[in-house]
Length: 631
Image (cartoon, rainbow, N blue to C red; front, top):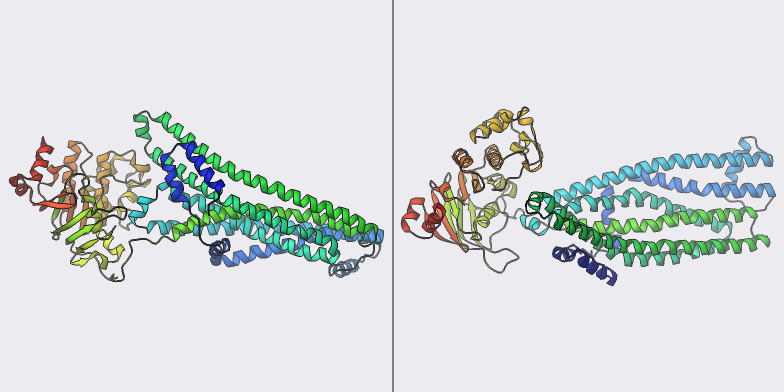
């Protein structure tokens, strides 16, 4: 259950930002996994399996480093006892050191002390070398896991249906594939091997100190449960705060994507000050969420340090008394004090890793929320893997459709046929259902009732990839990617430049190539800012010719261009639609005079159908639309 502190921070963030969208996004972004932390960790660590050799190397190096970390303090205490003659029970290390000293010909006390000093120096040097190797391996491992997780997340997102993108703003999805994945990477590059190293060091050190003196060891180990309780309290408080912070960050990214893309409109309507105030308010809301998270961390670390300080003082006090009584040697007491100081370093590291782990778990919840969302549109069980769109015939049979978020039908009994090579025009007011009809042909959605057929087969019988490769869509708002002119025409298709040029020439877009000195290699800017609306539209026509689909859908290509450009586009359209089934969403009725069939839609129903001349002669709804258009 979400903590009351997180709830108050959410309310505070909403109050600071005064953003009506933030409240909804906080609710949508509140992903609280039902999986236990260990289950989430296990799921994330599965990304290590493809890199198991690298993981084993980093783990092995970390464990060797932890063993080397225990030796210097032990050897220094042993050297002190050798000097002052303190009697102590030998451990398994002593015979190895004595054998080494004997091999070096060392027999006197002074020589033994020098020898032990050299051993300490060698151990530190080895630890440095192993530490360098361990750090390198674990960082490489973390980056490879990041790569795999980012690729998986993006691949999954690209396979989602259009409804998913309608429900999830760009900023949220960018967060998932960048910030959230990077946060998970710290689990592997920071917490994984180093946490294992520190845990191993604590385990080895616990065994060693109990061998040296059980009483002093019990004091140190007795503080562990207190530290664990503090860590659990931190987890309970901090986890919901991290969720809130990430939700506010998603809203910030979404807001930035919107307003950077709409900067022209912001400047045109003089909204700069308003947008600056909105951005400031959102950053203040994010700062409030971060501050609350930092406050919980500020509680954890001093409490941990106070616990360790008390335990250290107890070791010193009790150890002094035991040394006076002769129960422990001075060397053992010195070793304990050194171990006490060193023991808190890995414990502190592990507690700090709690913060890293909590951030990673919060990010992991959000990433797996994406990966666990199955696309609503996928190949059906009846799909025939050999089926391809060939002729381009389209048929709607009594099609009804409603969106999941609506209680009303958008389409109400749509029935029509488009034979191969015919041009069908869809006209009607906004909200009549034109866009929904063309979306059903490409199976971006499934019908609620009735059937959509292509070449006499229901669209659900086609594999999605085969169906959509047979249906080309030319939108009104053309997306131009930052890249070469060639790449923007071919969109990854493997075609030679001569074919690309023929397609550009066919749609009167070859002037684009001749306009630039580097021709097809010219790099277009993001969104095609250097191109006019007409040039972007002609570019999309060339894409359609390169793809060469049997079915072509056009969302009125001349709606936002001037009259002269419209004439050029009309000629290009004739070339583009020749020999293929074309379905046009018409805004300018003058562009569909030659359509084989015009469907007039109103409130999701076909109220008239026929050719241009037939509909005009009837004097009905189409005639009224046409009169308003030319008037």
